[in-house]
Length: 374
Image (cartoon, rainbow, N blue to C red; front, side, top):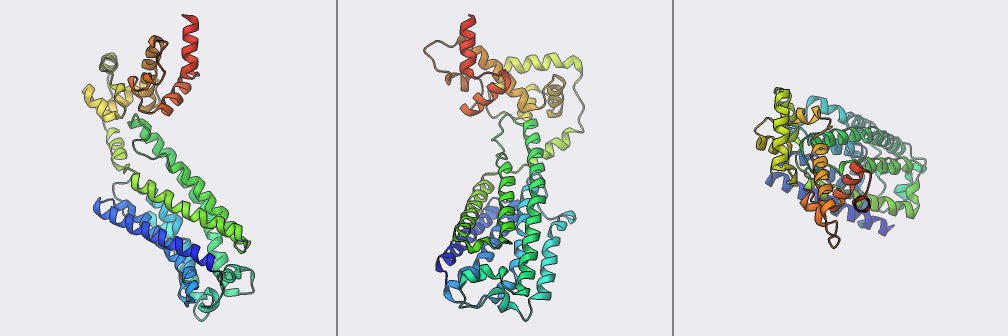
């Protein structure tokens, strides 16, 4: 038998099961109900690896024929629902969410029709080489091919649909964070854009699996590495990700509040500049509004009335103006990095990126230009 391949599946089994238990414990201790979608996803991934891993012990895995198809088409919906529920106060499944599990129901029904009486043919015999079970889709095994092709075609289609849905969620969260916070990293949602890439890679592996690529050692190893990176990527970011529900709840509440009168604009802007609130690295819209003694919705409207697209844009424009003043006065023996914290930034990379976006110049080029015209 192909023991190396079995070892790979054993590693995936241990990693996914360990991460599932860890997320379960964190969800209970920290009362983070949304993590349920991720620990169920990782648990099901462990279930997918269990059968192939047991072949190394020559164990009978006929039971896996009943699970594989339904489990495979459930994974992406669970990942998507985890991301979706980040902005929901109620993390439980709603009636509309059950539509995501129609492929699961279809696969279960198809399994109950096809598998009975043919489980051993579909899953492989206990003494069979693991690599031959991977190749079975090319063999004349009607029952195996019906389940394998159906689940992989559905999975491939899901990667296209969910990559679009995740991309839309990412932009929705990005806009909400920029409207309410001065640091993009505070809510730690920037990683979601990479989920789109991961989902598309999943489509690559599912699609080419239909062509039997896993009988080639290199592709089999590549798929293993992808699954391992997938697990580590999600465990790290799921543990770090803050709940976005309070952010969206504030946005909904703010829609019901009145706007500032124009006569108040000058006073509020002057007060904001005098207090230099933009120098607080992690200041949020609500914190700035409380310091100015106005409602968050009023400050948000005031910012937009003055030509800024969101709070993030407004704060960073103020910080860049401050940094330009500091750069103009910086002594020749001082480095530019000394300006970063003094202008309200807490990251060198963010400062350089925002400065270039705002002025069209790098801080170094701006300093050279300023000194040449002095």
